[in-house]
Image 1 (spheres, rainbow, N blue to C red):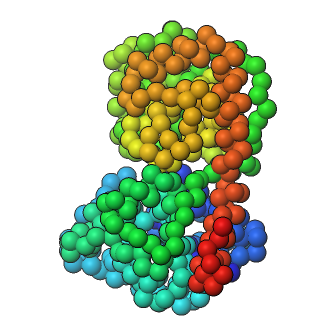
Image 2 (image 1 turned 135 degrees about the vertical axis):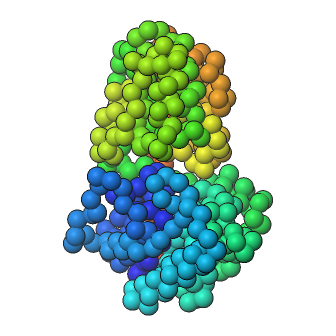
Image 3 (image 1 turned 30 degrees about the vertical axis):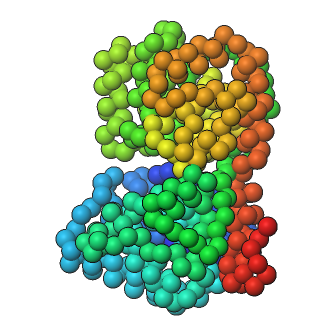
Length: 390
């Protein structure tokens, strides 16, 4: 099948797991013989080159959006209308040129939601992979939609693949969507980047790790506060890109708490991240908001590293206290400290959590996700002539 993929970001220019999952799935589609064309924004991150020419997937960076330098842009009504119209024209030209059998819609936060109207107008089957709450917040970020007081476009005949039951229920409750075809897919890690490692006895060294975009919602402040109440040898590494200001806030808090020299914050290339997980004694998933899914715990589980997690949102659907993690309430420093002390003193517990985590990581892979999404894209392209996939 010919697939046209639309997303606000696409690797190597990426900030989070949403766009990485998109690239993982599209890479597998291409490897299986499907013709994949990606249409994304012109955003390019400093110091990162575009993918090498000659790759099997064509990536066209031609759309504009309401985001720049980690901030939402608020253009005037006339400029917003121009931006929306230009984006819709570019999408229509791409559809006419590529002639896709199906359009695969991914991250739409900050995008012109009129793009979805264009897809509907040309009557090409579409699959929307909804991995966060963009149907709720998207109309507020889309300056043209906001100026007209417009809600998110109705899916109509589009097929919706929800990343979690939490996101499905949240969007349906707020927006009222009732898609004709829908399923919950979960997400998954790439076994090439995070192969499930055999468990091995490791001495506890108080090396703690957080992974993710450095922004307030991730709850890294709780991890820094916990660090200040742990033994002197404890260190905390936060691996992820900064949102522009929060890393400085975390460093300031660490200095005020007397642990400035025990905290490091820096992004890590994806191909080095597994080694960073493996080097840690425990990964802290201290998210202070309801994560749509949350791949960080699964990546840690694949690397045989115990997880202390605050299960919220979609993460509740795979985190199991005492089985593959130690669960703590969100923003609860006392609970994080107690969980880490418990792990430090109980090697058999660490081994049990690693074993349970490996079973979880073996289940949630991008290969499984690609298999599932391939079936749903093929079914949508055929307009469900043979019904929905099992």
